[in-house]
Image 1 (cartoon, helix red, strand yellow):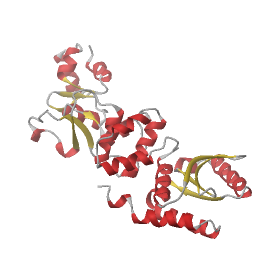
Image 2 (cartoon, helix red, strand yellow):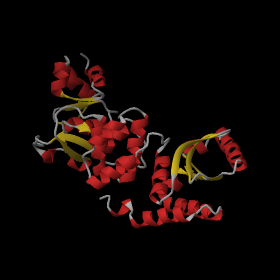
Image 3 (cartoon, helix red, strand yellow):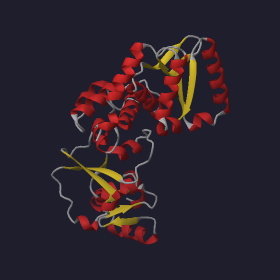
Image 4 (cartoon, one colour):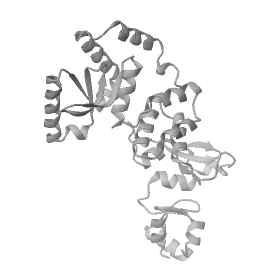
Length: 297
């Protein structure tokens, strides 16, 4: 078999033993390597020049992408792409000549099985490298896309008991985006009653309805860059105002980097509407005494 065709079948990178079993002849592989159409990133490993580095590293370490690297590979939305390859290796396996491998480029996560891990296991391991809010956002999207099911959340194992309970409590498959998840969690943690994807007559669903009167919409850059979407947003906002709702609209950067300001805006607006009742204030005061930021690590 042609070595380039074989490597394409393996996703761009493979060990020599795999290529040999696929029918690749050593002479043809070495010839392709001399021509530069195949590269040798590590002893016993061969790859196409455009192979993804995470896949190459996984082959070098005889591991599989996991944690945030797996999340990126399946297209789950994250605030920042991982700079290192997060790889899963069995607990019982040694690394052999570790010095000869590019250990500075990887984060190794030990797991108990030689089998390929399930989606939930990758998302569970992500607890080691993400904040609780970030993990909730990943789980929200995974649920919405059908990568995992709600009952599987009971099998989360990584992180403290308190963290796992907090994460399960906040996961909601109705979230439409990462920034929507973060906004929902931050507002609920502040003590507000928040309804995601609330359906409002003559308008449709809104991202978040807070205390039944304030609509919080969260927009990504791509959405803002579409003129028709921009005009549609303004039309929705006007209709919401006519119906008596107050609308606060935030960009992804607003939510991810200035969530405290968003919470302050909602608080001020509810106060001005005289909806900051004693019961709401009691919830806010209770929430202020316990913050996930204090214990998630």
